[in-house]
Image (cartoon, rainbow, N blue to C red; front, side):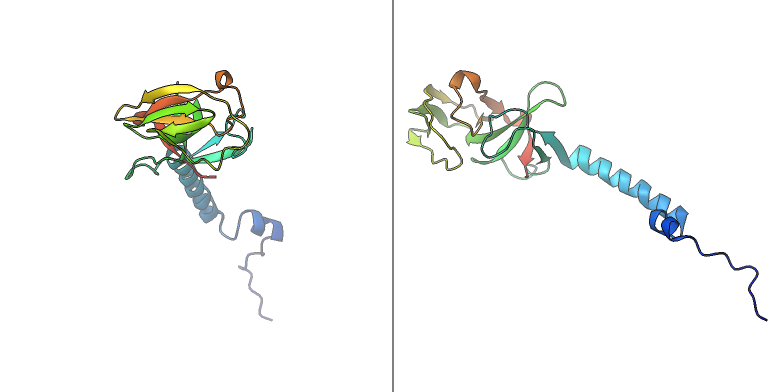
Length: 173
């Protein structure tokens, strides 16, 4: 009769699923996963929640999106990019679309964005718009940012000239 007295009983199936065969390695994997997630979601991809209707129909109210903070490390923001712009504090950002680049003159006439005297083609803008805004020339480090929902009244819409230093990154989703 050959029985192994030193053999350990095999762990139950639920323990294998939850912890694995080697709990010490599972703990190491969990710590590494938490560390990687912390770095990614605090330094590289910032989750932001859309609060308001200024980006309709492109982005819905109360939706969650990610901002890629590394998008503009090697290149500058471009016209049409949807970006997160830090305003006051660490956690308050606006999500807007860049329509004006540094040095350009931006205006709104008959509801159309006018850049350096030419009407900007904006297929993402839906609905009627009656905005009128006098021409403004941007400084060498400024970008003109505005939401996609141009059917809102001009007085109820928040748009601005954002310095490059305030643009946090490009919205991914």
